[in-house]
Amino acid sequence: MSNLENKRPTMVDKRTWGEFRKTGLFLMLNQFLHIFGWAIVMDIKEEEIVRVYPARVRFRGFSEGAQVKAHKDLSKYLVNNAEELKKEAHE
Image 1 (tube, rainbow, N blue to C red):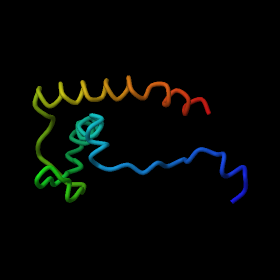
Image 2 (image 1 turned 60 degrees about the vertical axis):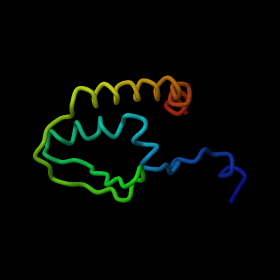
Image 3 (image 1 turned 180 degrees about the vertical axis):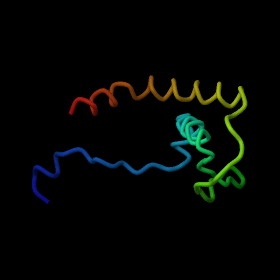
């Protein structure tokens, strides 16, 4: 690997489904997918995510409480990551 490649930022930073879920983005993604009758489903057993898969679903939307929590989680994520997101957008 050349020096130039060592200095370039990694384009993909693998994360866990749990990290993604904590951002509030998981629920937001599923709200969008519900429009088309789809969702990304997480099977959780004893607080551990054991499987994730796409599914056709009949329900549309989430409870008000779940939406409020997701909005709070997402705003917290944005506050904590705004500088990095701005920097990445301008690279």
